[in-house]
Image (cartoon, rainbow over the protein chains, first blue to last red):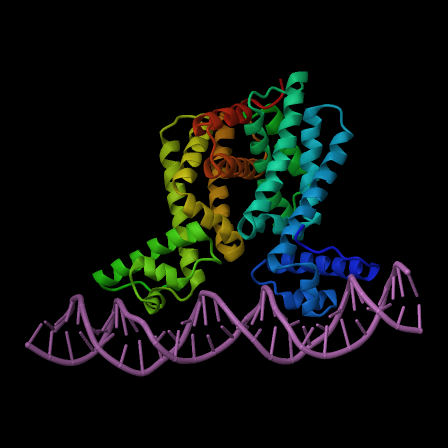
Length: 195
Length: 195
DNA sequence: ATGAAACATGAATCACTATTCAGGTAATGG
DNA sequence: CCATTACCTGAATAGTGATTCATGTTTCAT
């Protein structure tokens, strides 16, 4: 952790204010257009205060990517735990992901932009995710819940599929309900396109 | 077309040099780290020459996104034309896409970064692509080649799937052959995960 | 061959904003 | 209530690199 942790109640609050402001500003303007001046203004602190807690503009950004990682995994494992077999998990997971993207569009944008701002954290985010996904698929395959010879490829394929739908239907928006999108996609995932 | 077209043979050549240099520099450094100074040095012209043909740094970038659009569609429709039914088209299309990403990684990166540098052209790229894809799916569904109730959703799902695999296996690299990746993913696309 | 239109140059400009820092104020343990 | 650490301020710094422009050079239609 490069970024310094506060040691008093006051400092904790200030740091959180900055982090929240950064999420809002990065999320709506993007990394390049976001300025420390605007972030600190939004947070209600002086510009110098920023550098008490974060060594650079990139550092807050990185911390937000990590935060998003935690939140996403938490949101998904929560809904997946409520469901008995892997195929159902695919459906509720996809639907939950789409809803999550819609309600955290700022953070989602930050993760995507991390690809260019901080590739390391971007990669970590997705590799961590994919590893867990792969394991679940392997177990499901052994149980006979699904047929899946190469779980790594399938994991990345399904993650990509979810990202594609998230970008188009959750971020860009549509009249179509996310539920319907998830249902349609799930039919293909489970049964395939073959007639 | 904001960008001025040259009127002599010499100008044509110069413009092409700049465009090629820009592809190389943006592709390897990213938009922010790329400098006009480096692009023009690479192109073998003075900095001012850049502004004879392009009104801004963003403008070349946009032109490269459009170029990538043409190349991708061309590469894919070529292989798809050689195949009789839609399911086979999905397979060869996916494999060709992965190979295309691998051999045009710079341009691919530019398209992805366009999401943040020039969202308009990013959107145009994918919407154009999706529209064509959707039409093909509709025709295939009518012919009975595939079952597909909501072609728009399926188109975006499959595009996302291809992007996910491309990023992981074509860009980041892997011992695994792209052919094997395509084959595995295709099994899921055509037959589904259900045992 | 010639002059107008195109093209090329590269140093100077100019706006921008991340980061620093010297000089304060608040919190807290003893 | 001190002394010390933690925190805060906001103006100044300082590096950057996109864009401009005044001045040449090349092309090419006539």
